Length: 220
Image 1 (cartoon, rainbow, N blue to C red):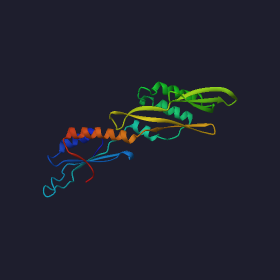
Image 2: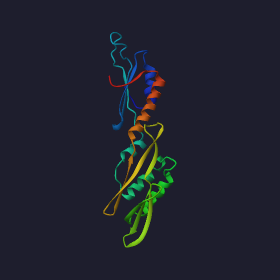
Image 3: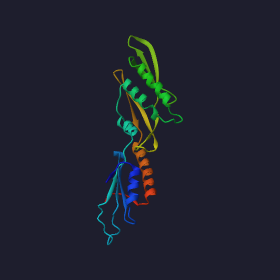
Image 4: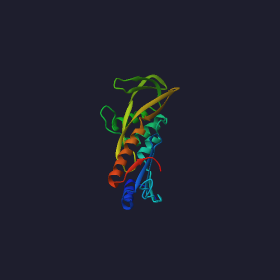
């Protein structure tokens, strides 16, 4: 049987587990965002005796949250000025308030600046002492008219890794590239595999604690 949520997996195991027989096996590949659990209800008791059929099994692969899929799906994807602003506006609620990093309000202001400057031509950039970048724009018909816009270098995101799970912090670097005066923006998540690893370890500890069933990393 294949279960779709953590609590269902736990409850199914508790309903059917057999003393000294039931075992959970876990396989992970955090870089590929893969986590799979296989509970063998009637596992072998020993090498020489107590052999079982191993045919009563429950499978569970955690479903990633919509927020996680949205941010990882757009990771390193380049956006135009307006599209990047729209992405930030749509996902402002995911921005974590962390000292020394921009708030959701700061990013909203940046997004609005992107939209306001969409028809202007990029001129230059200046790195600020705060770690951000100031982008300078000019009107196409007046090269002396200068508009300035601040861009942050790094943001903090607070989102659940798994569906209906606890929120975790993951940082992202904001990047930009200029090609023939045209700006392209993107973000790069910093070690999302480590965030998945932390979320998985928390999930595993809960499953072990609430079922009392031994769990091993591996495959039968």
